[in-house]
Amino acid sequence: MPKLKTNKAAKKRYSYTANNKVKRTKANRRHLLANKTSRAKSRGKVQDAYADKTCEAGNKKLLPYGN
Image (cartoon, rainbow, N blue to C red):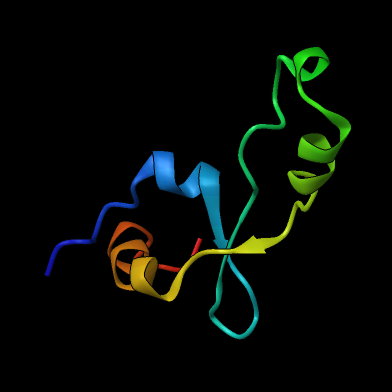
């Protein structure tokens, strides 16, 4: 049986916790921060957000080995 390939784009965006939750980083914190309000910047500050339960099956296909 051949090995499954890990999706490299998903590997950079998602990771698994010890309890097999899918962890992600919130969007809109990379650039153009001078134009954003402090409220918008603080809302995006959370580094360890969790992906939705609806996306979990798709993420497990993209990351078959739990990278």
